[in-house]
Image (cartoon, rainbow, N blue to C red; front, side, top):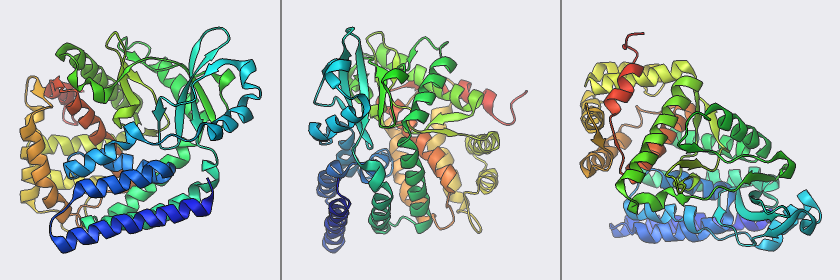
Length: 414
């Protein structure tokens, strides 16, 4: 990947998408599908930061127009693979003679990510592994790519996204990508999570293999699974089992260990034949300080009580509002939109009425963003929880969130 060529493509992508937005403004009718196709075409070639940005955007199902969100989501499923010759060079640098280490390595990846792609391999002992291979040269061009993506993100102003939110999103993107280059840290996270959640029988985390891993190749035992997005057509019982496991795991992550898997796009999750939840990627794990978690639960408690003043106070504590805060009517409408999922008894995450209210409310939220500007760490945490929420929606989860959350509220008895 030559730096100048990547820079030209990023700038060209910015021109194409910017032109599409200008035509949309002038014509008065938004062609979100065309804009999404332009982004898909450019970003699937660029990999790295630009593609990661699109993956983050694609998780905002409740904010983006459906046509645009669907085109961006395709990046998680149909991104153009890196040529095998380039990937092979990285593998040779890691292993030397590939024929001496492996009986077979599949040349076509079975999964692609923003920073690398995954190839199946078979050892001479007959064991099937997966090799997560970092895109060649990506570490060398990362900072240059990030500078160009910062320019590209200025297009967010066309969506009336406040500069503070764009800056926070960029900082999240930069920190996340720099961390994802560290395959040693990801291997440690895999080992830590495997030990920590060994008691969750319906959760599977692949075993990292240090003897096959290096700075730009992460090896794991192969775990077969059906991608989460394809489970939408699975039988009800299987989907509920996966959804319950996901909710149990997230709760334990946050409230017992103070960490959170921060890359919730659907491509990182699957279900095996036994209906167990498989987590493939732990390249982004963030700490969640107890004080911040308590403040977020205080906001949720105020929201479920419909207390607009308490909601404003909780946002102030989180550092998520400026000046006089948002109109109290917006707080009340937000509470009315969210509360149905937390009523006693099982609630349906697939209830389109909830999604419709959230989507109808989003323009009012954006309009108040001059007074609601979450700091970067809150934005990352909120985006992650939002992404996991939409994974539960895709599964058609039916969960008793009232029973799950009440014991975790600040006012709950110790």
